[in-house]
Length: 288
Length: 288
Image 1 (cartoon, each protein chain N blue to C red):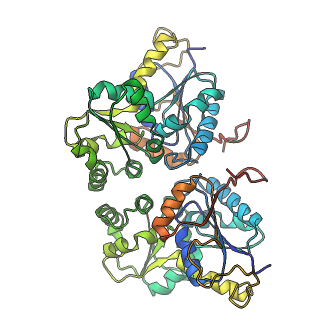
Image 2: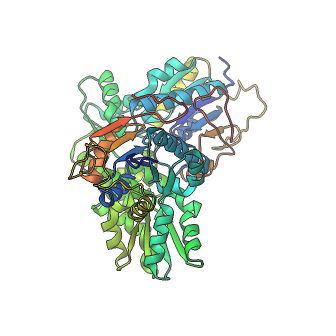
């Protein structure tokens, strides 16, 4: 495997940019190729069969692009489709659920763990199973919070509306003595402040994307795949890598303009290289 | 054309059930076949090319099923894809934009008209153009209200959260002397009460689905296609047609269970005949 290849990341849409940011922060020497499946977003209200099909198509698109590792940034796809994705591509595949579960168990110190996520992720019980595999018998309290996605994309994260939605969703957690709360959807870190204020207790908020970025760093190091300053063979590297600079490539399956607008809201930066592509049902890709 | 055929209705998801209900109320002798494209919902944040492709696939699916008329219940698809749909199928096609625009002009009596809709519908300016064609020079004030969709689907239509979201979206309209407000997304009639209370003035709310149902009734009568009590040739007709009874067939492209749950919230009834199908990229349909 060529260590100069980029790391592939896919998400159902724009939410995975929070995972991209976490990876970029921890691995400033790496290059990334990101795919947001904006033509078929959201995954969180869709069925297992459909999420699997979409996820495998995305994974194959990135594998064909040439990557050394695939990060499934989408919690729903990680919860439902990881085995199918691993069968479909040759590179190592890391989802966000297991790293998030490990970080939560470490933080919770034996207390119950709260998980907020999409409807599909909650129904899959993927976090509960992952947590049980790490520390059997841990109580897991899960809650779907679908309105958080629209609030984050609308840029309403700091509004009174966000506060009343959070009150509604999180009141059960506020009453329970939980040891950690997992932000089990890539959009939720955008609402971190309002979630934290609503919980109103010093409970660690686990960003699965950040936990995943930490594990990706270890994995690259242990497989001798990390791209460090010394190992660079290309001359394109810049000393001060910026988010969304032209070494990182972004693809969307639809509505690139809207993606760029929400990306700016999420990252404070607009991708330099952003292209709309089709990823479904054909061998050749058509750019439009 | 056989008047015994059903009327086809499609929507991006569950929202078009408000149009189905309006049609069912006005045309109790007709049968309906409804397609909700739940695998690819929502359309309102997607591009023209993508919405066109999805809409044409849905229209062809219903045409192949055998229908006497096609109602495009989805405002976004009506705004962006009506010409493509009309090219793709042989039956008459009615969208919800023009009937909604006509009803708004009639109600507004020369005052400015407000339109609330999805991002894609607002960007298309389809309502503004339709209104200008009917009464040139009418001022049209448009506003995208994306959170209303999640609120309706979550069953939060009557909550404080819905009130504060409505305050945020509708404050501009409350200040203007508008003559009518078009509910330009099929989900919004579910929030009719909170919208009306927020506007806090006796302004007619135009439900495009209801306006469309009225026009469908006239069209069937003028084309001698209406199915009346006397014209019935089948013996299956019941004297007291219920919403969602077994004479009306419902198809979804994904997650039938979730559709049934939200349908119950929207209609107070669950479809007797509900089937998941694929409508894309093939001649034969695979049921799963």
